[in-house]
Image 1 (cartoon, helix red, strand yellow):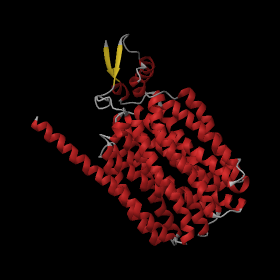
Image 2: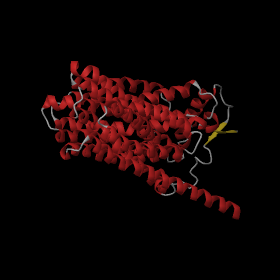
Image 3: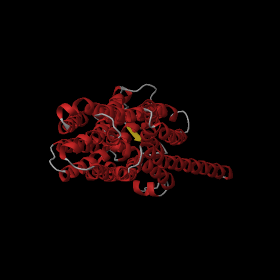
Image 4: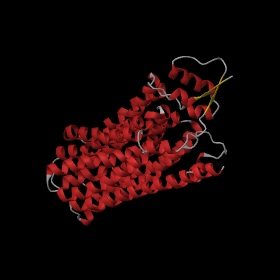
Length: 448
């Protein structure tokens, strides 16, 4: 009987059509996730005017989705390990699509808050699981780069939400703009149901050999011998029979805790800016088209940053690449505070912050996928994302306080520099910890 390591089939020099399909579908899920995540922030100024409500009254609506995202991310990891990545991805994509449409039909802040909460559950569950399945289909030499590019769909989705708002908001109104954002992922969910393959690592762990064999044969382009047995790489196998949750909270706890802290602080800044930037800029005197386009510059910069970081992550220490991005983002936040009165310099600084901060945030998903073995990857990635979402919730609430304290535009950016440098410190501690662990393993081997 032939024994085949499934990673040897996946680690090809040239991606197969099936691998490109997984990459493309993953990119589209990220895109729709970003579109439906960010669109409420872009339509917020029009919503405030239409309903005649105050900014603090809108804060629970903006944060409701973030609470749902945190819950969705945390529960989706164990669900994906039990029922499969594909089923969770399809179900949650449908969930956030349907309730995004419901948001466009809402007639009160209470209804809108409930619909955004349920939308958030779908959004939070879909992202870490699509990141996991994309990473598991990409060759190891280009895994971080390709997974990072797929993740760029999230920032592009947010940017497209700004573009839609800039050109359709005044003509069609905020409700129809939101409904458009919900129709697109419904169409995508049908394609996911028909075309997205299940994770081969998951299928092998669940002893679904025939399904795994059919997928792997499509990747390599020819059938296996009649008798074939599949195995995971040694690093991917769970020799202790521990549950995925026990692995994350045991062997991988220290690295996990630093990833949680970094993601928490990063998402606090990211969601404060994406949720409230259009309203902040409108308050500062920008027109509807101006604040929509300027706010779209921020996540679009992250697309470029994520591509560059993903390329370097495959060639250098991936944690080092991301932590230095946070350090430079911290410096740029300070600089932006000084140039906030200059429109051109402000726009350039905002773009560069997006490239560093949003690029680093996007790269945390492939970083965590690289950090965990497949036996606990779904739980590890989704828990990092879920705990990080708590920072997003705080960021959304803090955004409403900006107007209460009447902070200047420069003052806002000075304050946002603080959580950014904490992200840098968290990843620095993770690097030091990993170096210490490597030295201990080398010493142990030498003594043996």
